[in-house]
Length: 263
Image (tube, rainbow, N blue to C red):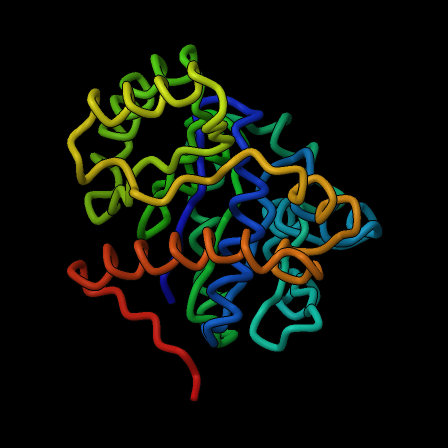
Protein backbone atom coordinates (compact mmCIF):
# COMPACT_ATOMS: atom_id res chain seq x y z
CA UNK A 1 0.00 0.00 0.00
CA UNK A 2 1.14 3.53 -0.78
CA UNK A 3 0.25 6.19 1.77
CA UNK A 4 0.00 9.87 0.81
CA UNK A 5 -0.49 12.66 3.34
CA UNK A 6 -2.29 15.72 2.00
CA UNK A 7 -1.07 18.60 4.15
CA UNK A 8 -0.82 22.38 4.12
CA UNK A 9 0.70 25.12 6.25
CA UNK A 10 -2.68 26.73 6.86
CA UNK A 11 -6.37 25.91 6.46
CA UNK A 12 -8.77 27.15 3.82
CA UNK A 13 -6.68 26.08 0.83
CA UNK A 14 -9.11 23.50 -0.59
CA UNK A 15 -7.31 20.55 0.98
CA UNK A 16 -10.43 18.53 1.72
CA UNK A 17 -11.93 19.15 -1.74
CA UNK A 18 -8.68 17.95 -3.29
CA UNK A 19 -8.51 14.90 -0.98
CA UNK A 20 -12.06 13.73 -1.70
CA UNK A 21 -11.91 14.17 -5.45
CA UNK A 22 -8.39 12.79 -5.89
CA UNK A 23 -9.33 9.70 -3.87
CA UNK A 24 -12.44 9.29 -6.01
CA UNK A 25 -10.35 9.59 -9.18
CA UNK A 26 -7.99 6.81 -8.05
CA UNK A 27 -10.95 4.64 -7.06
CA UNK A 28 -12.64 5.23 -10.45
CA UNK A 29 -9.40 4.08 -12.09
CA UNK A 30 -9.70 0.76 -10.25
CA UNK A 31 -7.27 1.39 -7.40
CA UNK A 32 -8.61 0.15 -4.05
CA UNK A 33 -8.50 3.46 -2.16
CA UNK A 34 -8.96 4.41 1.49
CA UNK A 35 -9.55 8.09 2.30
CA UNK A 36 -8.77 8.89 5.94
CA UNK A 37 -10.05 12.01 7.68
CA UNK A 38 -7.20 12.89 10.06
CA UNK A 39 -8.44 16.46 10.53
CA UNK A 40 -10.17 16.83 13.93
CA UNK A 41 -12.70 19.14 12.23
CA UNK A 42 -13.95 16.11 10.33
CA UNK A 43 -14.25 17.92 7.01
CA UNK A 44 -14.07 14.82 4.80
CA UNK A 45 -16.74 13.01 6.77
CA UNK A 46 -19.02 16.03 6.91
CA UNK A 47 -18.66 16.46 3.15
CA UNK A 48 -19.50 12.85 2.29
CA UNK A 49 -21.73 11.54 5.06
CA UNK A 50 -23.91 13.55 7.42
CA UNK A 51 -23.63 10.85 10.11
CA UNK A 52 -19.83 11.13 10.29
CA UNK A 53 -19.83 12.46 13.86
CA UNK A 54 -21.49 9.24 14.99
CA UNK A 55 -18.89 7.01 13.34
CA UNK A 56 -15.92 5.39 15.03
CA UNK A 57 -12.86 6.73 13.26
CA UNK A 58 -9.17 7.62 13.10
CA UNK A 59 -8.88 9.45 16.42
CA UNK A 60 -10.81 6.73 18.20
CA UNK A 61 -8.15 4.31 16.96
CA UNK A 62 -5.37 6.58 18.25
CA UNK A 63 -7.07 6.59 21.65
CA UNK A 64 -7.66 2.82 21.53
CA UNK A 65 -5.57 0.88 18.97
CA UNK A 66 -7.45 -2.26 19.93
CA UNK A 67 -10.38 -1.16 17.73
CA UNK A 68 -10.46 -3.49 14.70
CA UNK A 69 -10.02 -1.90 11.29
CA UNK A 70 -13.35 -3.28 10.03
CA UNK A 71 -15.15 -1.07 12.57
CA UNK A 72 -13.48 2.02 11.09
CA UNK A 73 -13.94 1.44 7.36
CA UNK A 74 -17.02 3.01 5.77
CA UNK A 75 -17.78 1.63 2.28
CA UNK A 76 -19.22 3.82 -0.46
CA UNK A 77 -21.31 3.03 -3.52
CA UNK A 78 -18.05 2.65 -5.45
CA UNK A 79 -16.57 -0.73 -4.54
CA UNK A 80 -12.97 0.52 -4.68
CA UNK A 81 -13.58 3.62 -2.52
CA UNK A 82 -13.82 3.53 1.29
CA UNK A 83 -13.57 6.12 4.07
CA UNK A 84 -12.40 6.38 7.65
CA UNK A 85 -14.02 9.30 9.50
CA UNK A 86 -12.15 11.42 12.04
CA UNK A 87 -14.21 9.80 14.78
CA UNK A 88 -15.91 10.72 17.99
CA UNK A 89 -12.60 11.13 19.85
CA UNK A 90 -11.33 13.81 17.45
CA UNK A 91 -10.67 16.08 20.44
CA UNK A 92 -8.08 13.48 21.49
CA UNK A 93 -5.48 15.38 19.43
CA UNK A 94 -5.87 18.48 21.58
CA UNK A 95 -5.07 16.47 24.70
CA UNK A 96 -1.96 14.90 23.18
CA UNK A 97 -0.69 17.25 20.51
CA UNK A 98 3.02 16.66 21.05
CA UNK A 99 4.63 15.42 17.87
CA UNK A 100 5.79 11.82 18.20
CA UNK A 101 3.17 10.99 20.82
CA UNK A 102 1.06 9.05 18.32
CA UNK A 103 3.74 7.88 15.89
CA UNK A 104 3.55 4.17 16.75
CA UNK A 105 -0.26 4.15 16.59
CA UNK A 106 -0.37 5.99 13.25
CA UNK A 107 2.05 3.46 11.81
CA UNK A 108 -0.02 0.61 13.24
CA UNK A 109 -3.12 2.10 11.62
CA UNK A 110 -1.40 2.20 8.22
CA UNK A 111 -0.21 -1.39 8.59
CA UNK A 112 -3.77 -2.47 9.39
CA UNK A 113 -5.08 -0.61 6.33
CA UNK A 114 -2.52 -2.39 4.15
CA UNK A 115 -3.47 -5.74 5.65
CA UNK A 116 -7.10 -4.96 4.78
CA UNK A 117 -6.15 -4.98 1.10
CA UNK A 118 -6.04 -1.28 0.26
CA UNK A 119 -3.60 -0.25 -2.44
CA UNK A 120 -3.67 3.47 -1.68
CA UNK A 121 -4.34 5.42 1.50
CA UNK A 122 -4.90 9.18 1.18
CA UNK A 123 -4.85 11.04 4.49
CA UNK A 124 -6.44 14.48 4.80
CA UNK A 125 -4.58 16.08 7.71
CA UNK A 126 -5.09 19.13 9.89
CA UNK A 127 -3.15 22.24 8.82
CA UNK A 128 0.41 22.62 10.10
CA UNK A 129 3.30 20.20 10.55
CA UNK A 130 2.93 19.42 14.25
CA UNK A 131 1.05 17.01 16.50
CA UNK A 132 -0.78 14.17 14.78
CA UNK A 133 -0.20 15.75 11.35
CA UNK A 134 3.56 15.55 11.89
CA UNK A 135 3.21 11.91 12.92
CA UNK A 136 1.12 11.15 9.81
CA UNK A 137 3.71 12.76 7.55
CA UNK A 138 6.60 10.91 9.18
CA UNK A 139 4.67 7.64 8.71
CA UNK A 140 3.65 8.18 5.06
CA UNK A 141 5.35 7.32 1.81
CA UNK A 142 4.63 10.69 0.21
CA UNK A 143 3.13 14.13 0.78
CA UNK A 144 1.07 16.36 -1.50
CA UNK A 145 0.81 20.06 -0.63
CA UNK A 146 -2.26 22.04 -1.75
CA UNK A 147 -1.64 25.78 -1.96
CA UNK A 148 -4.24 28.45 -2.67
CA UNK A 149 -3.28 30.73 -5.57
CA UNK A 150 -3.18 33.97 -3.61
CA UNK A 151 -0.15 36.19 -2.84
CA UNK A 152 -0.01 35.85 0.96
CA UNK A 153 -0.22 32.08 0.84
CA UNK A 154 2.54 31.77 -1.73
CA UNK A 155 4.96 33.54 0.61
CA UNK A 156 4.46 30.83 3.25
CA UNK A 157 5.52 27.96 0.96
CA UNK A 158 9.30 28.17 1.61
CA UNK A 159 8.65 27.97 5.36
CA UNK A 160 6.49 24.88 4.81
CA UNK A 161 9.21 23.20 2.77
CA UNK A 162 11.79 23.98 5.48
CA UNK A 163 9.53 22.22 7.97
CA UNK A 164 9.23 19.23 5.65
CA UNK A 165 13.00 18.96 5.40
CA UNK A 166 13.12 18.60 9.19
CA UNK A 167 10.48 15.86 9.06
CA UNK A 168 12.42 14.01 6.39
CA UNK A 169 15.21 13.50 8.92
CA UNK A 170 12.72 11.27 10.76
CA UNK A 171 11.33 9.76 7.54
CA UNK A 172 14.09 9.69 4.87
CA UNK A 173 11.86 7.75 2.46
CA UNK A 174 9.26 10.54 2.36
CA UNK A 175 8.65 11.60 -1.24
CA UNK A 176 7.49 15.21 -1.71
CA UNK A 177 5.13 14.91 -4.68
CA UNK A 178 4.99 18.69 -4.92
CA UNK A 179 2.75 21.70 -4.49
CA UNK A 180 -0.66 21.69 -6.17
CA UNK A 181 -2.16 25.10 -6.86
CA UNK A 182 -5.78 25.29 -5.74
CA UNK A 183 -8.64 27.80 -5.99
CA UNK A 184 -7.06 29.25 -9.12
CA UNK A 185 -9.11 32.10 -10.62
CA UNK A 186 -7.89 32.68 -14.15
CA UNK A 187 -10.16 35.72 -14.48
CA UNK A 188 -8.40 37.41 -11.54
CA UNK A 189 -4.98 38.96 -12.19
CA UNK A 190 -3.79 38.48 -8.59
CA UNK A 191 -4.57 34.74 -8.72
CA UNK A 192 -2.80 34.31 -12.06
CA UNK A 193 0.21 36.28 -10.79
CA UNK A 194 0.38 34.21 -7.59
CA UNK A 195 0.46 31.02 -9.65
CA UNK A 196 3.29 32.40 -11.81
CA UNK A 197 5.16 33.57 -8.69
CA UNK A 198 5.04 30.10 -7.15
CA UNK A 199 6.41 28.50 -10.30
CA UNK A 200 9.25 31.04 -10.29
CA UNK A 201 9.92 30.49 -6.58
CA UNK A 202 10.28 26.71 -6.67
CA UNK A 203 12.08 24.23 -8.94
CA UNK A 204 9.87 23.16 -11.85
CA UNK A 205 9.51 19.59 -10.56
CA UNK A 206 8.17 20.88 -7.23
CA UNK A 207 4.99 22.42 -8.69
CA UNK A 208 2.46 20.12 -10.32
CA UNK A 209 1.23 21.15 -13.75
CA UNK A 210 -2.41 20.44 -12.86
CA UNK A 211 -4.17 23.39 -11.21
CA UNK A 212 -7.48 23.14 -9.34
CA UNK A 213 -9.82 26.02 -10.26
CA UNK A 214 -12.19 27.79 -7.92
CA UNK A 215 -15.53 26.39 -9.05
CA UNK A 216 -19.05 26.59 -7.66
CA UNK A 217 -19.47 22.93 -8.60
CA UNK A 218 -17.27 21.99 -5.65
CA UNK A 219 -19.61 23.76 -3.24
CA UNK A 220 -22.62 22.04 -4.79
CA UNK A 221 -20.94 18.62 -4.66
CA UNK A 222 -20.08 19.07 -0.98
CA UNK A 223 -23.63 20.21 -0.19
CA UNK A 224 -24.94 16.99 -1.73
CA UNK A 225 -22.29 14.80 -0.09
CA UNK A 226 -20.75 13.69 -3.39
CA UNK A 227 -17.42 13.77 -5.21
CA UNK A 228 -17.65 16.18 -8.11
CA UNK A 229 -17.41 13.46 -10.74
CA UNK A 230 -20.74 12.04 -9.59
CA UNK A 231 -22.64 15.26 -10.40
CA UNK A 232 -24.60 15.27 -13.64
CA UNK A 233 -22.50 18.20 -14.92
CA UNK A 234 -19.28 17.26 -13.11
CA UNK A 235 -17.47 15.49 -15.96
CA UNK A 236 -15.47 18.57 -16.95
CA UNK A 237 -14.22 19.14 -13.41
CA UNK A 238 -13.47 15.42 -13.00
CA UNK A 239 -10.94 15.71 -15.83
CA UNK A 240 -8.87 18.04 -13.63
CA UNK A 241 -8.56 15.44 -10.86
CA UNK A 242 -7.89 12.65 -13.33
CA UNK A 243 -5.02 14.75 -14.68
CA UNK A 244 -3.69 15.27 -11.14
CA UNK A 245 -3.96 11.53 -10.47
CA UNK A 246 -1.90 10.71 -13.56
CA UNK A 247 0.77 13.24 -12.57
CA UNK A 248 1.02 11.65 -9.13
CA UNK A 249 1.21 8.14 -10.60
CA UNK A 250 4.10 9.25 -12.80
CA UNK A 251 5.92 10.72 -9.79
CA UNK A 252 5.43 7.57 -7.71
CA UNK A 253 6.73 5.13 -10.32
CA UNK A 254 10.42 6.20 -10.20
CA UNK A 255 10.32 5.73 -6.41
CA UNK A 256 9.08 2.17 -6.66
CA UNK A 257 5.43 2.96 -6.13
CA UNK A 258 3.02 0.95 -8.21
CA UNK A 259 -0.67 1.65 -8.43
CA UNK A 260 -2.40 -0.72 -10.79
CA UNK A 261 -6.03 -0.83 -11.77
CA UNK A 262 -7.91 -4.03 -11.08
CA UNK A 263 -8.99 -5.58 -14.36
